[in-house]
Image 1: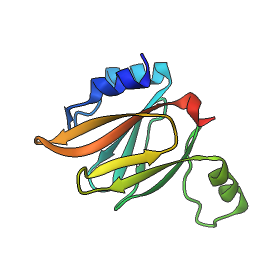
Image 2: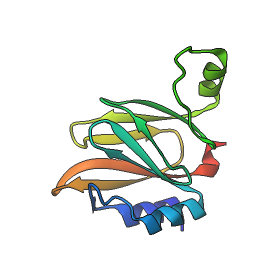
Image 3: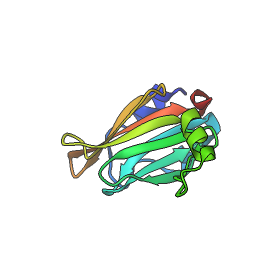
Length: 131
C-alpha cells in the first residue's frame, strides 16, 4: 500500500475518528506518517512517527527521520543546524478547512469532516522521504 492508497482510506472520516489503532500500526509497519489537525492548536502525527506539535493559529513544524524537532529556548547553533537540515510542514489555519498542511515532502492528501463540515486536509507521506 502506498501513500495515495492509505490517504484514500482515511478520506471522509469524522473528527475524532481520523485513524484507528490498527491503521496506526499498519502505517508504522509501512513506514508511513499520517498528519492531521486536532482541536484549534495541534497537529497530530501517527504511524512511523507518533507525536503532536502545538501550532495554535498555524506555524512551521520541523521534522526529520527521527521525529519532530522541538523548539530550543536558547536558539543554539545545534538547533539552528537541525532546522536547516530538517523538512518543514506548514500548519495553516484556514477558512475552507480549519487545518491544512503544506510541505515539499512528497505526500497524498485526505479530508476529515466535523459534523459534515470540512475540518482538516491531512497528509500522508513516507518516512524515507525525510532523508
